[in-house]
Length: 543
Ligand code: ADP
Image 1 (cartoon, rainbow, N blue to C red):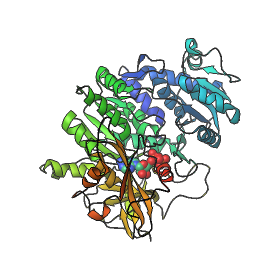
Image 2: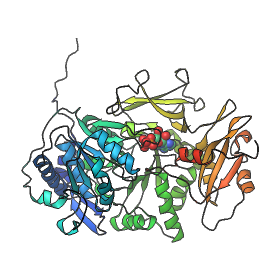
Image 3: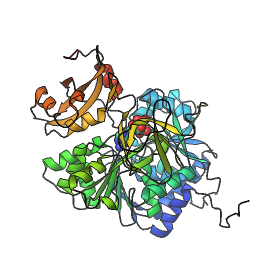
Image 4: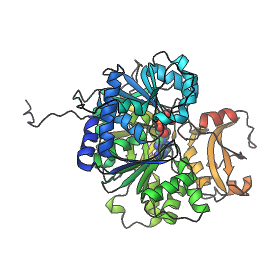
């Protein structure tokens, strides 16, 4: 029989992150660029006090343990208070992506049965349209002060966030409860069917916060100034609102001002050292910085994930701007971080090119997430950097079941991610594709990500997507859809020639078409499903 450990049992609760931040780093700033347009400054102590008041206000509105509370909001201090005030009081914070189609937003709110919805000023028009189809929603709260409340709106009632806070005294003690209780819910974006809810527990979220803060992960320190560009509705801004409280660093929230110029100015004025976001958002920032011949004075590290980061972007950040890129992989079902790319000490003396090759991969798993690759029959594949297989994961913050779905998503106790990957002998995982995006030419697979990475390095290319086009002999062959840089001139033949020597000849795309814009999902990823529909009848010259 085991000898039992004799240490205290304290539940891992979200509220403890905030009380720690308030007690030990209470004066450290939380800065927000507000929807109202101005810069707002507060600190961790004040965020904690106001989160307690919010918890009181929610109780006064009749919310009870387990109730879901929705948010349709950008990154800002009020959203941060909702994260903590809601989860901390045993309610469940359900962040919703306002960029989804309105019917999807309504579907998600009804599925989660949100009782209260918090809304940022410029998202109110969407909610006005949806509320008649949301019988579960009892209260809509507008995230502003009395002066900014609209005189006219079509809702039966609209509460004012600051009025709710002002009415409370803050005499509230964060409750203690089971660490396995739900803390928050995020829905998958639904690009492949109906959105599905992933329900994170307090325990999984706190463990995730510990893990992502580690030096080989995001490497967050109390002296950092962290600005999540990734929205707080995109898988909890990758856990940064929790990890920032854990380490007690300055936290900067950019609101909906995510264009290159606004971001650059905020990075400089607030001394941002570390950031995180999807590749598309960084294109805007890099273009702005280059066009205006600027440099970053404090920005040191950025975590890029959510979609494959083109190697050319890693090089530009590192070589031209001295910003270290940490390539990360994750998904909603992992809340979200699974792997991050950083070098090992044995790589220290490698040539820059060889180092770059390693950093292009999606990286090593953080402790807490285990991974494997399996073939179509479920046979586990070797970690040799060559064998590809379906990526499966398990761990402390990996989904066990979806909200309101009976059927288990698991395969043999592992969660199948839908991604195809290789893993090398050092444990570096590389995504070759989402399984539905792989181009199946004859019996062979071509990685759409690899083709895109080649063209993204061409000076005339702004963005490139590789999709499978129908071919009478090979079933599928690669078609590239390309957006040129403004004023750049380049021909299809030049781009095709650019592949020479970079990939095996037989993988060279069969055709290239130029478009003005590529479709993106609500989280800023290439919307391949839509592209495939758009080019369903495309006749390849090789067909
Ligand atoms: P959704 O699946 O709803 O689009 P997620 O944000 O959960 O939203 O997306 C997770 C998926 O994004 C992963 O399964 C993977 O296909 C892709 N992804 C995330 N990070 C990377 C990365 N660094 N490289 C390549 N693909 C990535």
